[in-house]
Image (cartoon, rainbow, N blue to C red; front, side, top):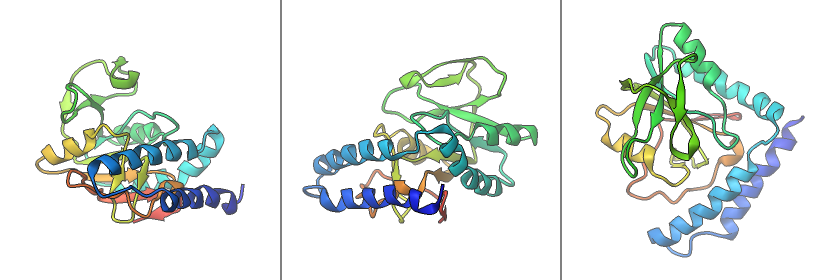
Length: 209
């Protein structure tokens, strides 16, 4: 598989944005635009597991470098063809670190991070996503954050629930955020709003910024 096969989805995403910008800067119009972008970007993700694994490799390699010195790392359970970081979390734990998963304990509020161990019992949380079976709250110093879309100012387009923004806004001190996605998730802008919080770093299969 050559690089040209990976470049066309990114072009289609930028064309979609130019052809269908928000009707105005109002939150109502920006939110409607984001919903359309979100659907298109999720469909553009690599669906074939071998391709996804191949393209994830440089992202995971860069993440491993970024995590040096971190103690407690917030991860996520992969959902809808997201990049799988569980192997990286295993290695972090084996090296003496701690990994944790986000848990929604109250809708429209900040999430809690519960300690995760590979062999520990799991239960089901919001959207039926697995969460640790035992509530052991930890406070990550680094978060690995999945993206639906992003722009070069490091603003993140997520699934629309606002959980990461609420969590970061409530965090003191705020953890370092390493957001990851495939390169075609890049947009010229997500049209950031006052509640949007930029990520510390954006890491894709084409590089980091």
